[in-house]
Image 1 (cartoon, rainbow, N blue to C red):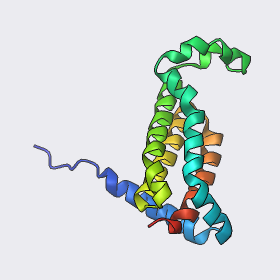
Image 2 (image 1 turned 90 degrees about the vertical axis):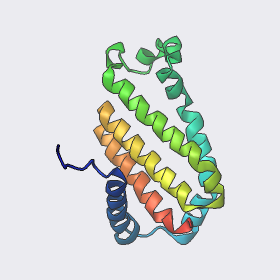
Image 3 (image 1 turned 30 degrees about the horizontal axis):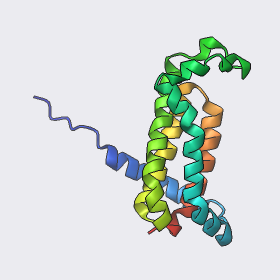
Image 4 (image 1 turned 180 degrees about the vertical axis):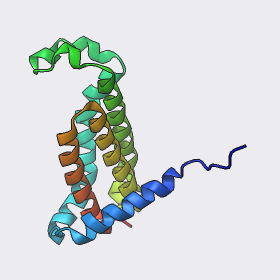
Length: 157
């Protein structure tokens, strides 16, 4: 019998959070306090809007997107690009939307649990974009999203 332990994902996410907090929360140039307060105040509404915007992707993953699949080429997306990575990436979007939805009540109360849900949502979105092959947008979006998130961390208790 092997005595190898299963990976401790909670610890890994905690270590990643500490590292990102150090570089994006403490060492990076700080946002002005009034900008932090404004973003924290509007955070729940921004989250709600992002969920509404992501609803078409969710319908696509549920199979309802085939109704609108003819629109892909009109937007410059050829039919061939709807492969395995596309659908795995959409799962990342769904996970992100679920975490955003779970965060909304706590965002109004500014709880640390809500902040952590937003952290997981940002990670899921990043992973989904990487799997889809959108490396540049994943890096830019992930970096900007994490910077804002870690700058706002002090506003949540």
